[in-house]
Image (cartoon, rainbow, N blue to C red; front, side, top):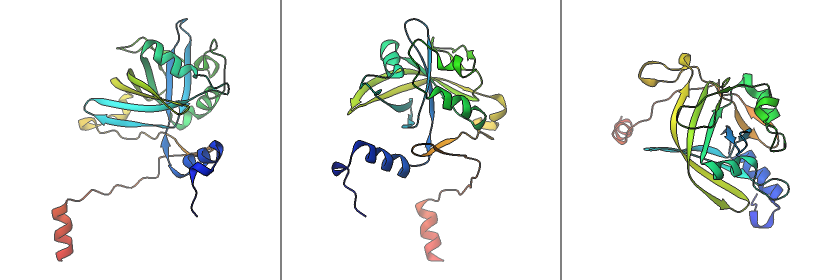
Length: 207
């Protein structure tokens, strides 16, 4: 079937995109407004952008009124955020934080979570999360109705039990977004196959 996005509604294109590009990691972003209220919201249009320097990006849509959501507004104002990764034990809290709370109510508090201080930025991290990344804003740009946020990771916070020799991460199992509107996946079913070089491929063809 050929499906031309130009001929579809926004809702249809969103459904196709979020059900075909899967699984997607979830950036559970904490940010802070001028009054010190901590906002916490999940975004699955998210990924790493590079390691030298360490950059990541996530996309924040507008609210029902067509205005910037609290996360984008806070980050544009002070240039700081934390990406907290969501494991299965935090799913219920993450789901609560996705609701459209007013900007003067902290989703973190409503979800029964606690803050832990960051090292390089003022925005706190979620204490209960096993992995958190402090970020400083690089830039924001509008892409249609989405604010694309790119930022540099200035500090990793990783639970001690996850870190092995040579910084190998072991036993970390974040959940992912698998489909719209409410399908998720676990990352515990894995397989490990080493990549091959061109020389190894040539050798295999010759045998």
